Structure formats: structure tokens, C-alpha cells
Amino acid sequence: MTDLIAQRAAAPISELDRGRPSAAPGRARRRRGPGQSSWWALLFIGPTAVGILAFYLWPTVRTFFMSFTESGPFGGSEFVGLDNYVRLAQDPELLGALRNTAIYTVVALIGIPLAVGIAALLNTAGLRGRGVYRTLYFIPVVTMPAAIALVWRMIYNGDYGVLNEVLGVFGIEGKSWLTDPNTALIAIAVVGIWAGLGSNIVIFLAGLQGIPDTVMEAADLDGAGPVRKFFSITIPLLSPSIFFVSVISVIGALQVFDLIYMMLGTANPAMPNTRTIVYLFYEAGFIDNEKGYAAAIAFLLLIIILVLTVVQFRLQKKWVHYE
Image 1 (cartoon, rainbow, N blue to C red):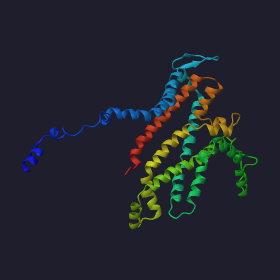
Image 2: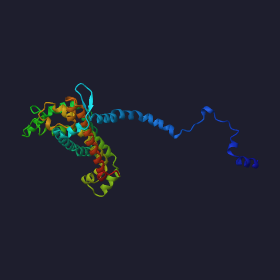
Image 3: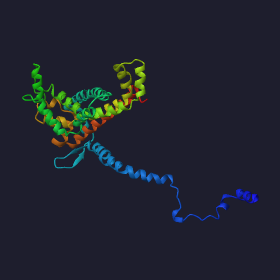
Image 4: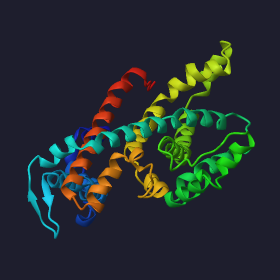
């Protein structure tokens, strides 16, 4: 018996398995090669890739080639080389549009520290009605831009506007905010801050809730007050969220058009002081029917956004803390 056990233990595995019934051919388990799983990845990213190619990359390439052409009055186009870019460099309205766009962008960035402060208050432990406050701040984000423009036009109205009525209570004489060249652009920028405040607050709330409680507890043990904790702990740990919001805020501010178009209209005397680069593109492409020149303006805006985004990513290494 002992010799039989020793022989079975020393026998090769192939000889031991000869007497066992083999698995059915149809039920044999096949190993999936590394190349087969890539088809599933392509299947899932395919719709997104097609959308990016069709709605982003191809229009960008098409706009670039269109910027070297000139459209005819009855359709068609002809190649004119760099004439559109030369004309754009000599256009006196371009500098004004760039200046107005820069002013709007700078004012719009004020909404970032405002959103950080509100998010910090909403994140306070024990605050009652936090869900209600979050909802109220987020309502403008899901509101149609046309409705926002209509409401704020009535608020800014120089004859019966709510803003002038409130200022009159304090003895301050109001004005027609949207027709005054000195105040129209700032007034529209304030509306832009108000409309985008809710989305920024949600992003900052998510960042605040990701800060470990142990860090705040250690600061309390060291005797740090609320102000010191906010500037020495909260802001550095929230810097990745602040960087993200700053990038998307700059890109959105450089592309502002809808608020200016709906709040001012085309016959507003303050339009020269509020015309942005996107509004200049609208006038060239849809009013003057100069599609080649409009494409040059659009490509110039693309270059500006690309340069500013690269600069922001370069500077973030000095103030953004990921750990």
C-alpha cells in the first residue's frame, strides 16, 4: 500500500489526469488576451471621441482655414491669405473690445473669493438651513440667461428700477446703469458674478468637506483661531479647487456674450464701452456677413485663451498645494 502511494505521488501530473474526463469543448474556459479588452474601451469612449471630433476639433480646424478666406455676398469664398489678420491688427475696435473683455474678466474674478467665503460659512458645523441656502445660491445656475437678463434689466432701470429705489432711501441719486458708458460693463459683470456664484460655491463646498478633521483638530490644540485656520489651513488645502475655478472662470469671462447682447441690445449708447471680443465676432460674422474676418477674430480668441490657460498652469506650481 505504501509503495502504491509513493508511485502515485511520483507520477507526472499528465499521467494522473489521463483517467479524468476532459471538459466539454464548448465549455472550455478561454483566456482573454490583452488585445481583446481594448475593444470594450473603444466601445465606451467611442461616442465621446466622435462628439469631440465633430463638435470641437473639426470646427476649430474649419475656422482656422476659413480665417484665410473672404466670403462673397452670394455665398462661396476665395483665399485671401493673411489679409484678415492684417485687417484685424489695424482694426481700432479690436483694442476696445480687448480692453472691455479684460475689464469684465478682472471684475468677474472677484466672485472667486466671494464664493470661498460663502462656502466656508455654509460649511460651518451646526448651521441651520444649510440645504436651503445652498439651493438659493444654486438657483441662478439653472436659470435661463434670458430670464436673468430680463430681471436684471428691470433692477437696473433708471426710471423704476429696484436698485435706484433702494439707493434713494439712503439719499443716493441713482442713474441709468445700463445706458451709462461708465457703469454698463461693471453692472453686467456684477450679474455675471451673481449668476455663476452657485456653481463655484458647490465646488468649494466639495473641497472644504475633503479637508481632514484631524488637521483642524491639531490647529485647535495649537491655539489657532478661526481666522488663522482659514488663511493658514483652509485656503492652502482648498487651493486645487480655487485653481480649477479660476481657470474655468477666466475662460467663461473671455467668452461673455449673452448677457451683453440681452441686457443692452444693439442700439444702446453704451455699446462701444461694453463690446467684447465675442460681440465683435458676432457683428462681423452675423451682421456684416464677413465670415472670414469673424473666423480670424475667433481664432485670435482661441490663442488668447490658450496662452492665459498655459500661464495659469505655470503659475499654479507656486501656490497650489496638492498634499
